Length: 384
Length: 121
Image (cartoon, rainbow over the protein chains, first blue to last red):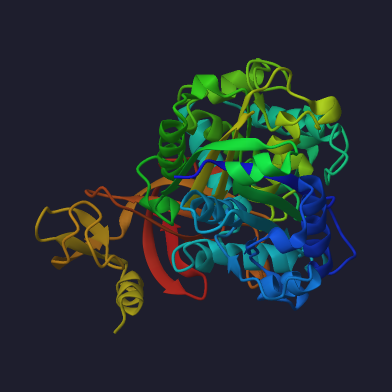
């Protein structure tokens, strides 16, 4: 297999964006191309992740992007895997470069939904569940994660205030990220006093619906060296699956696909959880970050909440979790999120993360899943 | 009848249609076509009582379209009696966590536009 590198990365700001989905897809892609210092004509194909293009009247967005980049002759593929779409398209691009099919690919994730309003997004996002059993019975996505939170509160020594501390920590990081959707500090009281969305989760336990696009240039090591810019190496890539509905899982406080994806990625990288300096994990809801940090092996089952309480996941503590602000504060444009995590890792490992820099970081991890973790991808990166 | 229609007809009778693997005995909801444990496609139907206890749940106050008039309501996962199987559904009339402690006895009572209906026993 070829060694695979990230040669450039870029994002639009995440938030409520005025420009069209085609515009933000292109803006983000151009920023990654310029970051990589390549000519668009060197791109052999693109992998686009997007879930609700229909909301902005544009599906099949790949050829639109390629046309705007002046490479309409190059192929593209659009990938949907719910909130995990970005990491899945990254993985498919990774596999194609590793296999030697292509030496340089563009990976762009995008979502544009905020103009549709809360009812539309709540309704359509629920279509990512196992609809017959969950969405049809009125389960929203906050509701499904709230069901996991209820199970966690029942099984372990945890409180709703502990979950709130995850949101506070991620907002602290997001304030340092100029591209974050929610750039404001919050307190545990703010979370506890915010409106209940799906008990026990409150508004500030939930990530926002966001617009945004993120892009990376993925290439072979040979291509990266020839181009001379900053790059990081992808040293591990893993995927996994879980029963689509929560009811199919023996335990409601763990996500099987995360464990499977992490095991594969760690094995390929030749590392363990202890070697990870920082991680961008899928914190669509505060409970999710706690579960993720346990499933990724950073903490024992049931201890993730204690780690939060002790501040061990803050920036430049034991392990910096979501230095970007995570989905909670940076925002969650669902098709873009998995790619945006790679952008953060690239910025961190190439010294471009500004005030939120994880000191002396050499190895970073991304963890992104679809729905309640029915599908998941984990990647491990190393500075060169 | 499709597998979903069969599941619905049984739910309307308060029952859960399951597939028991004829090779290894593993039990699945009847929407499963191949055994998760051994890969076999041989199943026999087993109809279970839709009774059990609440494994976990949430009370939804920001609903998807169509559920506004039922809000607040619970979405719950029911651990079925005498089987390693869970099934989820809609529970009306639940407003606070005090209304539905985990472990509460509950049963399937029907199926309508709100999916599988679960009520407290």
